[in-house]
Length: 472
Image (cartoon, rainbow, N blue to C red):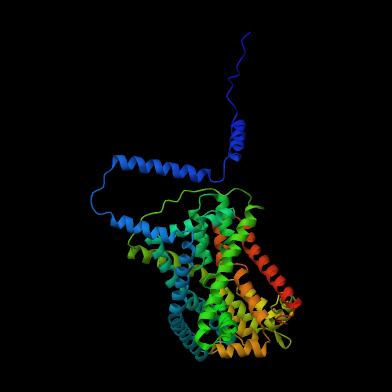
């Protein structure tokens, strides 16, 4: 009797189940080996079919550079050194233009106030418009514009040169182990200039799940709006502990240490998200390293200054104006013999002390949700009881205010650096997350995830330090 053979084709579900079963039997490096085999075969065919005449020295030189910048041992150190140089150029180069721009914008404020006073405009209108709304805008523009105008062109030069794909290549194994995409290294780097720009840059990631991971974790690297606070803390509490000749180096090292810690939290939170609410496998991608190119000055100018710097600054200004108004109102409206700012700070103080900070610091960060650039002047205003944002003449005066008068300790400084690194994104970034995801839920997660992390880390740090008798 002949045996009947079932020739019914398998259903799609059966095919997928069989594919999953076979995939589990493959080794972890199967895809890499397959890609290597394809490129080796392509090279073999090219060598048989193509003959090269002329000098190949340029290609050999590029290959020697790639052996260095993509080396398992030297690739990451070279990347960190270049990143430190970019930070140094950004911070050092932005100081003078920021001061000049602030001087010019505050001169306009002084002239406008004098004009309003001469016209007999009520003091509260003058204060609200010029000392509140305008001063908030002026501070954000003067602090934010010069660093972005330096950082984004430098970033675009590396992009145009062809180095950024090498960065993605170097960091791919870390992000892949975290369940994320290797291209997240590029969006993370963009976040150093502005987290909103970093969120927009996630469009280069094709996988929706991995793009969402990159969006939700971009805030864990500090943007240029948080650097004034980090630099101030590093200078006062770290640099002051060293000899004057080494103070600036020690302060810079402290800031770089915070940056590296932020990268660590980016990887950690990417790993947690990829195994919880955004569970899934990291998608593999084949990255062809492009040849090195001579940067296009016109493209760099348009991409960095027009498409990135001015675009981000425009969004920040829209959120900074209401912040300036709120600051002025809280500092000038009294309930009894105390301002609303003092009352709110007093109410927040127990929570602030529990995480190694105080109520004034928490109030400052609530007010500064629209723009991180106003943290330091708002902090000084709240401690001094001034009616508008202000700053000290020098770091020595600022240290006397914070340490001698307000009782800040090393624990306060450490926790403030951690909180500044990990807290919720600014309003511009939150709005950008919503626009990129078109989801209120993910915008809320993007805001609350880092905020919850900041409170947890600061609480644990303060609790352990107090238990050991440090920084009380």
